[in-house]
View 1: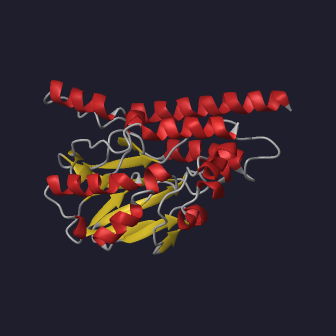
View 2: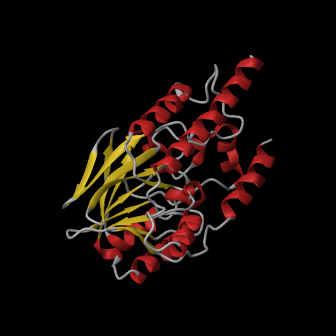
Length: 286
C-alpha cells in the first residue's frame, strides 16, 4: 500500500510545482506571487513585506522573480509565514529565508515536522507519511526563528496578520487573516490553510493522532466565524483564482470576484461534508 501511495503522491506533487504563474495584485497591497496551483502571497508594507508560503524547493526562484516583476525586492521581505509543514508549501522556505534574511514564524504544533523536513513525522498524513521510506516527502528544513500559538498576531509596521490554527490537515495548519484596503474599504482577507483529510487517515479510535477529529470540527467552526471578505487558500483551484482573473477582465466595473464570502463558505461546507462522510463510513466499519 505504501508503494501505491508513494506513486500517487509523486504524481500529485508534480502538477504545477515548478511552473511560473504571472504575478498580479489581488487587492490593495496584497499580491499573488506563487507557482501554478500552489499559492504564495505577498503583503507589502512601508517597513517591510510579509510572504506567506514558499512552495516547493524549486519554486523559490520563481517566487523571487515574481516579486521582482511586481517591482518589489525579496530583500525587503521581513517575515516569512507558512500555512503548514508540507513540501508543497514549506519546501522553498529555506531558500527564501537565505535570499531575504527574513524571520520565519512557524506554528508550535508544526515545529517538529518543519524542523526535520520530513513528512514521516506528520501523523495527520496517515499511512502516506511513510512515503519518506521511498525518498519522497522531504524538504530542506529551514531555520525556525519564532514560534506562535493560535490567535497570535504577527506585526510588521502597520501590517497585522492573525494566526488561526485550523488543525487536522496538519496539527499546526494555520489560516491567516489580515485586513487589506480596497477602494477605500477595509476588507478581511483569509488564507485558508487546508481542510483536506488524507486517504486512510483514522478519525476513530485509534485516531491518526489524538484529537484529529475534534481538531477538524473546531477548524470548520473557526473558519465559519471569521468575517472573511476575500477568499484565499493554499492551492489556487480551491479559491478559483484563474476563473476569478478571467471574470475580473471580462466585467470591468463589476464587484471584484475576489471579494467572495459565498465561495469561502461553500468551500468550508464542501470540506465538512466530505469529512462527515468519511467519519460515518469509518464509524460503520468499527
